[in-house]
Length: 386
Image (cartoon, rainbow, N blue to C red; front, side, top):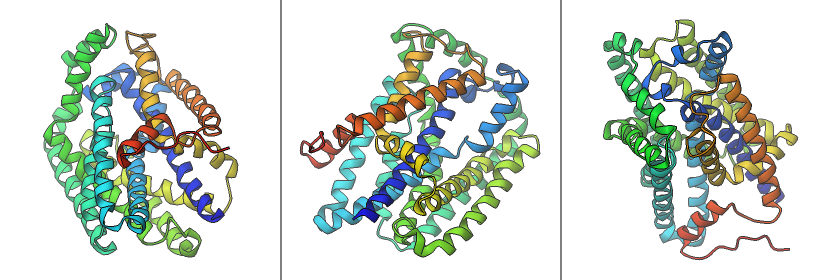
């Protein structure tokens, strides 16, 4: 029983780490429209900004939503196994209901708070994962490789054909409207946010995201099926081999394009291949570190944040909404990258402290409690038993 608790603690800690990476990337999109509409180099012009953007691009950009996707896959399959033991014929029904609840939360988050929501996409991908969940490991890996390879190859060829346009892309009208509306009233913010959400969630974009994220869900399922998640010490040789393989692919496909000047047409190579393998590298190396009892202080800090991952993810958006937009402190477009990294450290540190304190009293975060209650159709016990 104690060993199992340690393994869960390890996965929670990796999830907490993923939330830190997501915060680093999302704060840039919350702060200005340039990640979406171009012109970022002309907006952040100092040498420090440039260096930090490269640092974030290599280690964070497109690495942490795949890591979170992988963790979703791990969680779905662990839950599927447990449900199968209790209610065999209803296991998939419960999981599907869980995804529908997540979709409602994600839709509300995306429309009313922040267009960059990932939960709705994860819910769609989760439903596809449930459909594929009983397939053998070899089939799941073939599906994952085919999807990731196909979308990366197709989009890279398309981007290469449009390389001149992408190199100079900057939507001045959208940028101007973003600055005007996100610094206004909630009605203004809502108008622009919905417009941006429709851009992010157009049918083509959704298909591309599914083909990029579903492979990582399936890899998460595979890692549990192989026993790497539940018994990493028994598979340490294979895990260590894949740590080196993923690191090499991470360096070649994520760092390599920056050595070529970071051309925009290689973005899908960086994101699809480099981002996916960097996320798998992060997962495997942290799994080994935590499973062998190393980094216990770090694990004890990250795990509470990860256990409240849904609440902390939504809280990050709510804090940014108040901090950057016109209804709050109105820092939209007013800071440099170093300022934003200070913001990240402060916000994440507050989340660490609040998560540790909260879990001393309660079993689940407020949004986790809603999520579980609606999933099971029964009010869940919130407070810890004394």
